Length: 629
Image 1 (cartoon, rainbow, N blue to C red):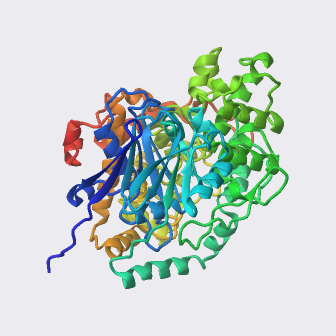
Image 2: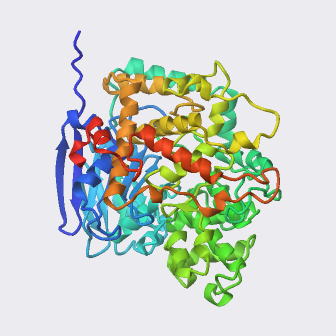
Image 3: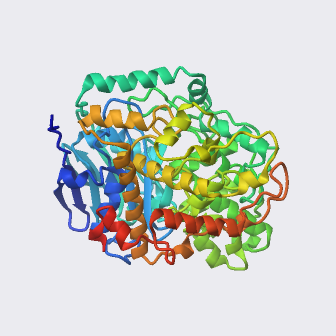
């Protein structure tokens, strides 16, 4: 029997803020299937609508929001949205995801993507309702914190979902983010600064009737599977401790980044318990952290996850849990990426400790472990005051301005500050941090710890279904084997590229990486196939899904190639090639020769030109991307 399924068309809403126009566009389903939502659709639209070489903060840089055909269906992990533009941090592709409730309402309004171009003469916000957009004045909101801005918009429109920038985005801080519900964010790559450059304060989305699955009975089985998984001890513990549960084990192993990544050993850092309970649309996991109310801390701004705890905590030598919660809240109130903000502040503390920034230049004494100076610096960055105006450029640009050896202290790739998962311990991440088109990102591939998955486990089975060979898996060892923990052998390179493609697929289908994934998550690759079939009637395969993920990565890489990026941009901070100085991880480092060899093998496996690190014409044609040539 021949299937009657036809892939749905994509509905694109084009808003030109300079002209004040709104226009609908349709991408036929046969094309949409190649880029079915999220990051892939957003990057395709960028490549079509943006001229190479435009300044990231100019009106010629479009800002794209995109969901997938599955967004808003009644299952956990299906309410996420991608935001993409040319990154003000790197000058290459910028891409970031966020969850919560707005993505489901965005999709319920019948939209696949929103493309915002041009620049408004005055501050405005967009109200999406009934599948179209109204441009509304936002001068009275400009300058407000995100909490006050959210209250002001809801007083005008009623019960809407809101994604907005804060004062940092308005002032074009290059790592500004787009904040949802005051507690979630399209955080990385500086997308919030692009929004601010357009004088666009917020996106408000009215509620609408959500989509229904094509096969409700089969679709409900997915929810039953998830409910069963959430009774497992791991998931009960995860719901309670969340990602902050990573702090203690990594600290004890000596792999919790301390003092601008100069060490991984921070025994004074205490475990920080922050309750869960923050939910996304129809998700029973409720894993989002919510800080309890205390002096200076409001629960509406959520609570810090592991990456934030490290970035504004151990990166800066801070041990106080209350200080970390306040730093997290400053970022969400003013709209700054917590990882880049914390890393940039820690870079400034490092510079001060070495005499590269004077007390006169800083306006105060700076030192690791001083909460007051960290909070003051963060506020100065958000407002672009004093030394904060330099740091608001991001650590890589700030280092060039400061000079005096400061570039050697930067811990960023392609201008984006590194997350808190140390590649000294997870060596395949060193490769992904370097080659990832958007800069360092810990959610672009699976981590090496999954190579120790037990035989017969679902993690091992799921990874094998992606093509990870049995020979790639390791047996846990009781001895400290630094050669094993630091080396990037061929099997790890293959593991990195295969899981990178699957994670690329997850960001395309807008699936939450806590619920859906290839290893430790609650639902695996086979469940994605079942969700596609029962959700919209799409009978697909692992091979097609992996190709979609690969296609998106090649589009992102080609975007960067148009902007002049080469393999010379696929490098790591100098500090990573130096041995860690103390603690259980003493001596651990990335071997430069091993890294270079692994990078060359990655290019070969990816089908990219070894001399440039960019996709070859043959590779683009094999992925139906000949239109990029």
